[in-house]
Amino acid sequence: MARMMTRALPLLAAAAVLALSACAQQEPLKAQPGGGAPQVNRHANGSYTVRYDNGCIVTYNQDGRRSGSQACRPGQVERADSAVQAAAGAPGAGGLTVNRHRNGSATVTFNDGCTVTYNDRGRRSGSRGCTARQVERADRAIQNRG
Image (cartoon, rainbow, N blue to C red; front, side, top):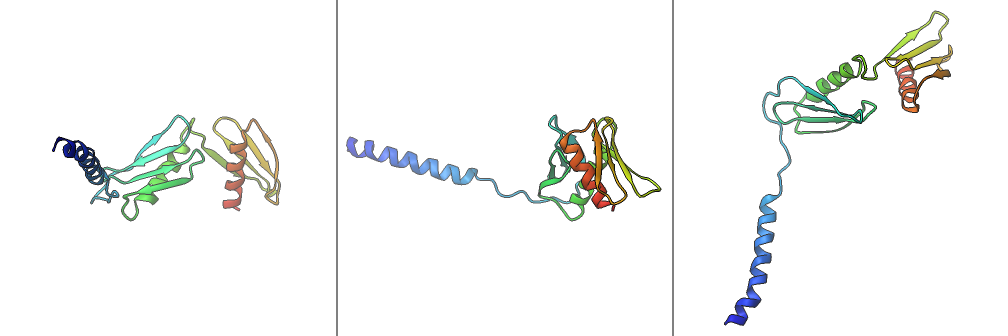
């Protein structure tokens, strides 16, 4: 009898662990009513997380591109997009300004002094004091506002 109990204990322990792990699995997050205002958090690496009171979470990479969302109601992701764009435009947050000139050329200037210039055809003609990421962002800004 003792030998049977010795053999049965590991099986019972394994069954208990399996049952507990099945119970511990989280169900996917579901959006709750409401949500309130978006709460924007900028991380040290430049990425963003936007949270709502109803559990909606929207994440963005360092370039401000949305990288994911969960448990959001209609309209919340778009409001989060706007909130991150506004936060990125704040002083010191890497915001940029596009200036179109009369001759068709353009200049993109970042808050930190980086300047990227474009000719009248929208082709980059130079940059000063910029990182590769800033040049890419400036290129996208010119393409999007073409």
